Length: 96
Image 1 (cartoon, one colour):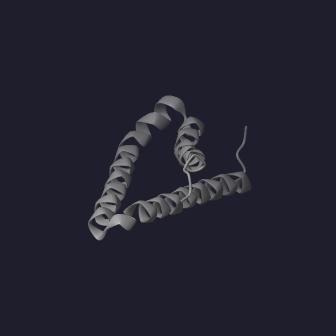
Image 2 (tube, helix red, strand yellow):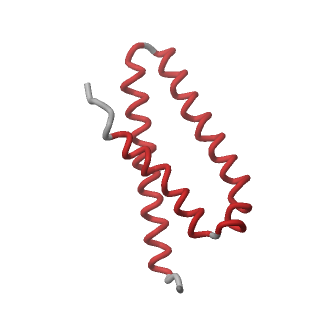
């Protein structure tokens, strides 16, 4: 099946929106959890940014091999899955 430019742009746009949503959601959770003190806020932000950096490095390292082994559609699906999981878990968080 042929992938049109509009379909590709739509898929990348939706993926970017999902990532932006999950990023804002994580920032909101960090702000909520760090109301106890400035030290805790710094530690949580450090953990979030470190996790993001490690994930970015691992995905950049493994993406070429995964695309060769499974194809681009599978890799895109796996990439889109993580922001969806974050969004789903957000529904389980009780607001205070």
